[in-house]
Image (cartoon, helix red, strand yellow):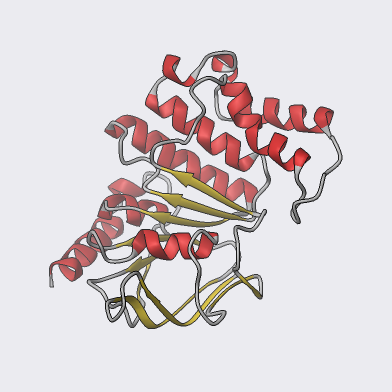
Length: 253
C-alpha cells in the first residue's frame, strides 16, 4: 500500500527530518506514529497525503508516486475543519459536492445526488448524528464535531485513512469512545489506517503496529508489533500495559 524508500526531507538546508528512511505499510494495516514534538510525525503523514512534496519519487501509494493529494486518501485533523455556517449534514456532504464538480483530473464529474445523499444519511446514522443533522458545528459537542469530520471523510469511501491527533482536544471518555469507534470502522471498512498521536496509550490502542520516531534526522524505522490490537477490553490487558511501558522506556532513552 505505502512504500517509503530512502526518503530524504528537510524544511531547511542541512537539517533533514528524514534521511535514508525506509518504511512500508501493507494494505489493511492499522499503524500509529508516535514520537516527541518536532520528530517528523505530521511531516511524514502530510508527505503520504500529498500535501508536502517528496523528492525523487521516494514515496509510493499503491505503486504510484504521490505528487498531489490522491482522491482515495482521507485526512482527519485535530480541529475538525468543519464549516461553521454549514449544518452537520452539509458538512458531511461537502467532499461529495466538490467531487461532483471536479473529477480526479479537475474535469467536471456527473451529478449523483441521490446516491450521494443516501451515503450522507447512512453515515449520519452510523455515527449517531441523525438528531444533530440540521444543527451547526457550534451547537454540538466536540465529540460530535469529530464524528462529523470522520463521516465527511468516510462518505468518500477512502482506502487510506490518515489522522493527525484526531482526539487530542477531547475529554477522556469521549476520546476513548471515538477510539473504539475507529477500531470498529477499521474492521468494517477494511481500511488502511495511519494515526499520529502524542499519547503512548492511544498509540498502543489504535495501532496494530507502532512506528516510533526520534529526534531528527530519522534514519531507521523503529517498529513495535501489538498483539493486543482490537482485543475486547484491551486497555485492561496486561500485555497492552507491558507494550505501553516498553515504548515509554524507549522514548526516555
